[in-house]
Image (cartoon, rainbow, N blue to C red; front, top):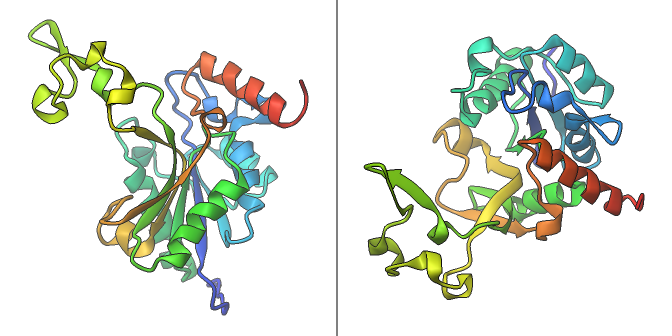
Length: 247
């Protein structure tokens, strides 16, 4: 039966995307972190967020599906394998999930949350903040959490013709040699971390996670970690232990 919702409030869909084919760390998304599968942390944070209507796990793995259900996520489908490949984009699996719910359950969200399983420090407060930004500004097309960039982009390099050149050219930065300058001389740079909240039309019609008006919620750098390697796992464990008062 189609799921109906007579509430006048915004319908908010949280989507946790957890494919099984991680290359950097095999089965990273279900690897234990302080005794809990990695993706369990953000599922629980989303479930505690009062504005989140539904939390969906989009995965290609029956094993991951069962783990997701244990932490309260719905798993109404398995993601097609072509959408779980390295080349698949976030837009691909997010629009697939929304289309599936509309087609099979007649349920359409107003706001979609991209909730990465690699962000175990994400809190329900951060999720709520991103939703509230869109609720309070009808012109905003999306919102996201950000933190100070760990390395300023002006100081990055790329390789061209077998030699190093500035990643961002002088014509854009205005600096001949930014690698030797203090970061205080540059405009402040932020990196996205954790949550993206996007309106239905922005995602489904424009196929964007941004749109013309992107709002933000700032995080402290100590609350920002995206797990991609073993070092990130160690850092996340230390930060979570501090947060939980275990050290």
